Picture 1 (cartoon, one colour):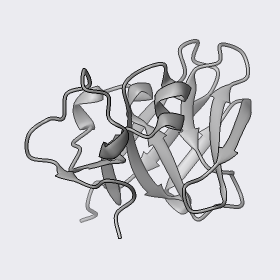
Picture 2 (tube, rainbow, N blue to C red):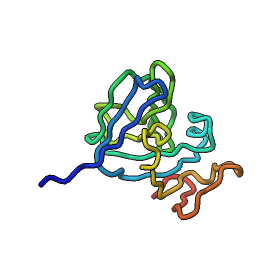
Picture 3 (cartoon, rainbow, N blue to C red):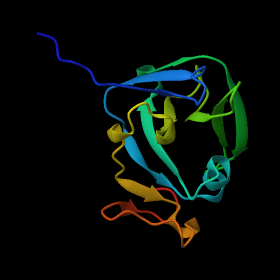
Picture 4 (cartoon, rainbow, N blue to C red):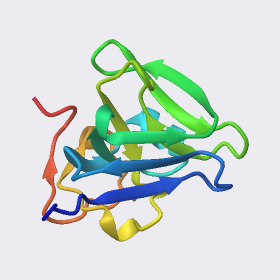
Length: 139
C-alpha cells in the first residue's frame, strides 16, 4: 500500500499563476526584513520552503529582483496579470522555492516555526509566541 503524499496548492488572486508542492515544507516562518515588508505591503511575509523538485508551477509570472542579505539576488514571482505575490526563486535554476503563505488555497497548512530579520520588525507587527527568533538569517 502506498503512502499518501501531502499536496499543498495555491496561487494568485486571479488564479492564472498556480502551484502545487508535495510533501512537508523544509522550513516555514515569518520574514520581517524591509524588502519583504515592502514587497508584501505588510509587516512581514509568511513563507514556506520546498525543494524545487517538489514544486510544480503553472501560469505566467513576472519577476522582481532585489539584492539579498547574503549578497545574491532575491527573486520574487508575481502573477503577470493581477500582480499577486506567489513564490520565490527561479524555476529551472534554483534548488529550492519559497511559497508565500498568503497565496495558499488552505491557509491552515501554514505552521511557522521561526521568525527571521526580527531586528527589522515594526513594533506594531506582533511576533507570535513559540517561534524561534533570529535577528537576521539563521546561522
